[in-house]
Length: 255
Image 1: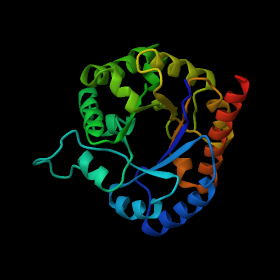
Image 2 (image 1 turned 60 degrees about the vertical axis):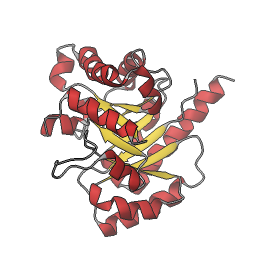
Image 3 (image 1 turned 180 degrees about the vertical axis):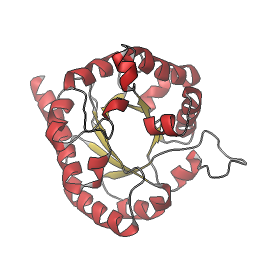
Image 4 (image 1 turned 90 degrees about the horizontal axis):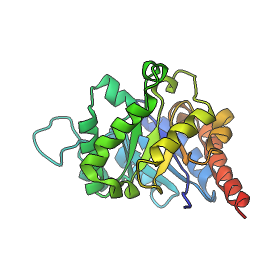
């Protein structure tokens, strides 16, 4: 099954109107004409409207970093999936490890956000992954299975045909450490056995231009969820080009 790679930038709590404009101008010039890869930027809520205007009609899709599991109601500070859709979002990250760890989001809450995104016509990017302690204890597959199974129970397996999964080993986010391509592939292959086979599974753990080619060459890695490197135009574009090249090389190897 052919899966078009996706490279999604997660800006996290970074940005300003001036720096966003400069970054996006560089990205739009770099992604124009690139084939065999899709790209997205997931920006902070206050910038959605302005960024949507800059991206309109381009090859760069807009995404958000979080969403409420509620459609409406007395939930001060929350943002619904329909609001994100109205502002032109195509993607939304749900269950990022920082949301789980720093803000206490449970597997059940993440599953609710996943369902809410789908109901509004958004593509959720569901993050799963283990901490260093869990990996050292040999619990990686147990943790990933638990996180996936909560969503599967809530939405069913067919919902994953309209979703993206991102494997993010928590111990490799912002630490400078990266899972080896073989470690990433092993978890991606494990996850794929539990969900819709055509679902794109991204790797999200300190992807840089220097390691992108090796990671994207793995058969079950379908691109990346990029943190720090997505804030540097040259780095993000280099990663996008590596994803595009990996796709072409994989296709050539099958002919």
